[in-house]
Image 1 (tube, rainbow, N blue to C red):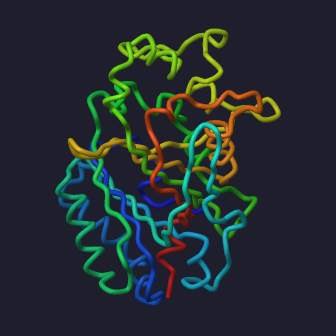
Image 2 (image 1 turned 90 degrees about the horizontal axis):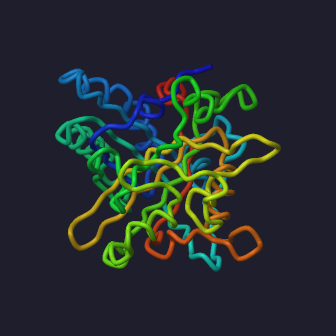
Image 3 (image 1 turned 60 degrees about the horizontal axis):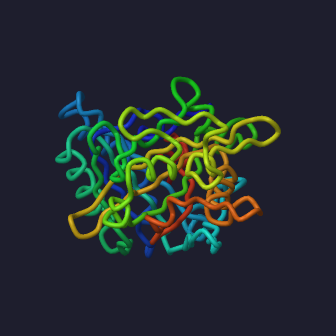
Length: 302
């Protein structure tokens, strides 16, 4: 299997920058995509201990404008959802870039160098800087990403395999930016918050299965199909200022279905009125889907 781009599999970092663009000049964008792995390596070489990595991914609507050498088998636009538990909008984005390391300055240098190369070939949709919050907690105060796969399972969950050999080593990505209503959340008692998450807040202990409310976040996203858990590799991080803040949610997977089913379970529910009550305190303002090709696929672009 071809190797993934450098930012797909490593463990979480302290800082990340997420950028989305609309593509205006396909040829110019291809040249930057081809060179991005090399640019990342050059800046990473200044401070190897900071573990600078990057990922570039392309949306369904822009794929054929950029490339003429095949299309990932399951690449499709983001599926907007409107349910009794909330809304998940689909928002325009052709190109997604994920930069991360242990140093904000390195992330800045790579983002700036890439933006300079892109120039007028793209129009910026959004650039969001994220940070680790205490011991990898969401701004709600609960540890985030506890169920992430570890070790070799990260590649098994995140990377396309032999079923789509041209794009083996690539990854499907779904992103959403959530805005939290922390004032409302913090009016709840810790016990009420724990019932919404189905995990203890201070020591991060998951509730026993029978004790998880059907409206809890963990119950709604812990899904099984044919006895097998549906998994994604999360690279979500908190972001924001004192006035607006939340979670930049990013899921990497070998297929887009797992994320779609989790989101539907949260917002539409189980058919019996049970939706994710965490969505009473957070709402998505963006949503887009992409495919991140393997590194060598990018490096061979003309």
